[in-house]
Every structure is written in C-alpha cells, then in structure tokens.
Length: 26
Image 1 (tube, one colour):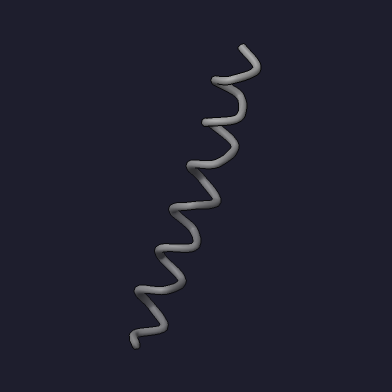
Image 2 (tube, one colour):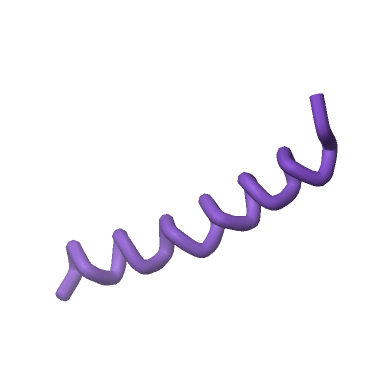
C-alpha cells in the first residue's frame, strides 16, 4: 500500500464529491 497514492485518491474524491452535489442541486 502506497500512502502517497491513497492520499492522492482521497484528494481526488474530495474534489469530485462537491462538484457532483452542486451539479445535482443546479
């Protein structure tokens, strides 16, 4: 398990989720 990959993956999810929610609201 590579911690850097895990961190980058979490960051990607954090960036994706807000935009998906905003798209649903709009």
